[in-house]
Amino acid sequence: MQVFPFLVVAWIVAVGLYGIVTSRDLIHQIVCLIVVQSSTYVLLLGVGYVTGGAAPYFSDVPAHTKAVDPVVQALALTDVVVEAAVTALLLSFAIQAHKRFGTLDPRELARFKG
Amino acid sequence: MTLMEVLQAVVLALVGAGALAVVLARDRVRQVLVVSVYGVLLAVLFFTFQAPDVTLSELAVGAVALPVILLLAISKVRKREQ
Amino acid sequence: MSPRPRLYLFLAGIAGLVACYLWAFGGMPAFGHYPGPYGPAILRAAIAQTHATGVVSAVNFEYRGFDTVGEEFILFTAAAGLSVVLRRLRGEREGGRAIPDADNSNKRTTSAAVRVPALLLAGPTVLVGWWLASHAQTNPSGGFQGGVVLATAFVLVYLSGEFLAFRRLSPVALLDAVEAIGAAGFAAVGLTAVIMGLPYLYNFIPLGQIPGAVSSGGVIPVISFFVGLEVAAAFTAIIGEFLEQTLLVRRGA
Image (cartoon, rainbow over all chains, first blue to last red):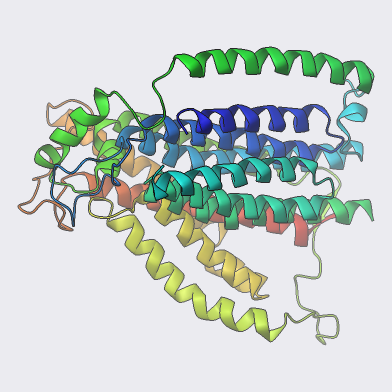
């Protein structure tokens, strides 16, 4: 348990990248990119965790109870919402590519130039 | 190992398995459903890491908004293929 | 490059990357032994300095407010870029079955099992989203989560089969205006501090008496409200654009 979360992070990155490299469909690639992004959230929260710490909210517990790190939570929180919008932008590119070239296979798309 | 650590280890293992399931699902609609379940698993993981804010975000985005956007894009592409 | 050699090259690369990762993780402190010093310093000082008990939102909107401005503008740009990319190209027209026929013969009705819960839950979802966006300083809530939940309420209206109601409730001009107000409001709050002679995004509103009350936290609930508006409008606009593409835009002039 000392290092297990970080092993899972490395596993998720490897699996997601494998999906992107061996994919034959642009939308499948975009979803694999979502998986790779999720590994960063797990890493951020794993770094900031304090054993025995509570969530950093003090409306019902006294002000100096041991709590986990709030800074990485703030980063991960804005991350999650913003990456969804960027994924939507990528999907719009995929739709327009399909309209223009009729295919969503990255190998066939690579053959078109200009 | 305390109960919290056991819980975290179990959910971490499930998340790892979920990531593999998302990548191995080749059919588009099936993959969207799997990624929705993966989003819920991630939300549970963030909850066990004592991060309720991130849990809320991940639930709202990964289980609802992102699958809706994906399904709409898939529907548009499928319509043109017909 | 054909698939097989590409796969082998990838496997070699990923082996190297994972090796580097594991080497790095070996040198980090073990899981659960976060050494600080930034986190514990903020936890010690946050409640006294900002009168907000939700420390994550205090970090998001005050201590690291400048980062959040940047993130919000990423969201804004993504939504704007999406509208540009999905513009109507030469050779496309609008029109399709979303517009009801004169005799309703082709109108597919959604099953009641989907319509009734979706419409029943749309109202409470708006309430929950609004509450989340305005209580950033007290509980696990904040502008980003509240905004997404608010956008989900509009999605529920669409799922109950009423695309035209969805479009009427959220016309594109209104969404663009709300999004702009949200983004500009956040930047304006920071600029107001500059006009008063303080650093950008300094907390200039009186902090309030009780830490964790709705009226305390100074500038944090104001920023959170604007962020909630912006995120809700951005997500609703994104989903509206996709829906238009799916339901209305057709090939052929």
